[in-house]
Amino acid sequence: MKIRLPALFVIALIVGLAACKKTYDDAPTVVTQVKLSILNASADTINIYQNGSRLNTTSAILPGYFTAYTNVPKGQQTYEVKKPFNVNTSIVQNLFSITLAADTNFYHTLFITDEKADDAFRTTDVFKTATTAVDSTCFLRLVNSSPGSGSLDMTFGNTTVSSSIPFKGYSDFTLVSIYKDASQTGLTALKIFNTGSSTPLYIDSVSLNAGTNYTIYTLGTPGTTGFNIGFKPN
Image (cartoon, rainbow, N blue to C red; front, side):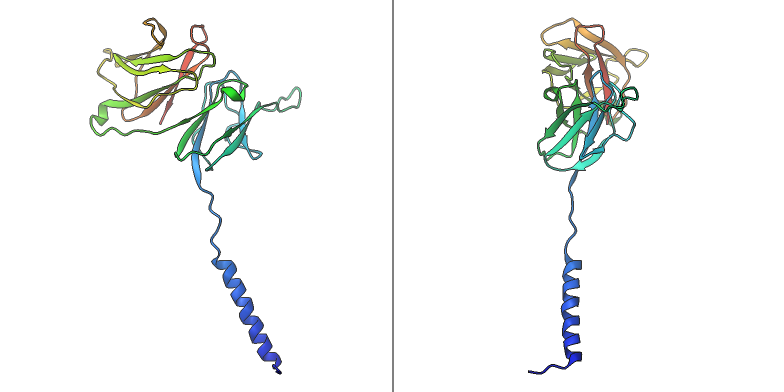
């Protein structure tokens, strides 16, 4: 069979257009993302990396501080915790790597409590919304981020917010009234106890904002002068 040259050109053009159409019809690769916040409950100044890129947008995460939620790929992921560049030694000290298993929840916080991977942990952050008394209530939870501590309890005014929280443990967000047990100046006593004890390890007088979810996290070793708490509002 003899085919003229113009006919061959038309056939080639059709095949080429079909190939191009297939390429442009392919769906783009979509990476599903979740939100991760990094909380530094250790005594070190740190940075955190994923696949060689630093996640924190500030130059470093100071002790007791945390980052805003940032997008990270969904599924099992590995993170590297490092100290900042040391200008005296010209060294970036690697502390550890931690692999977090896949999780179906959207918001998480990664707690760094010291220089050991075994003492780092992740919380699932399921925020709540008040359906009544929105202008006079908020939500509190306790995260025990003090390595070597026993279980802890927390009260807000006369309300027990969290009970028997072990190291790396955390309670659900609990609805509290921000005015019910407040003083005339509008402050309410927030106390941390060893579980089963009536003697507070820590007492603070706080004024909280209505409608906010507060994570209260521990810093340092309970029973020592350095023991403290931090507030992470959402």
